Length: 64
Image 1 (cartoon, rainbow, N blue to C red):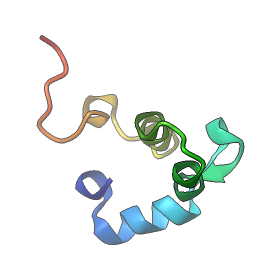
Image 2 (tube, rainbow, N blue to C red):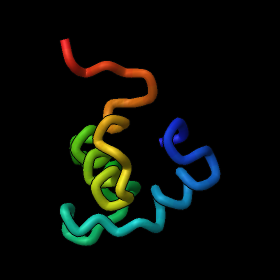
Image 3 (cartoon, rainbow, N blue to C red):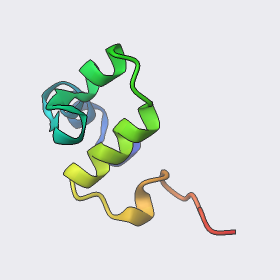
Image 4 (tube, rainbow, N blue to C red):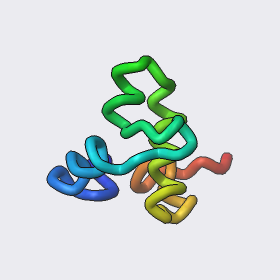
């Protein structure tokens, strides 16, 4: 999240962004509940309109 949003805003997203895909819980609540962090990250990407090309991190080529 830091790569995409910067440290300060990533911290805000973690505690304030409500993810409807996870029953209106925040990323922090999902983590505490043992949810798959990859799936939480993808939900954050969708909710924050992160371009799909960046869902796997900066400079990551997902096509082989």
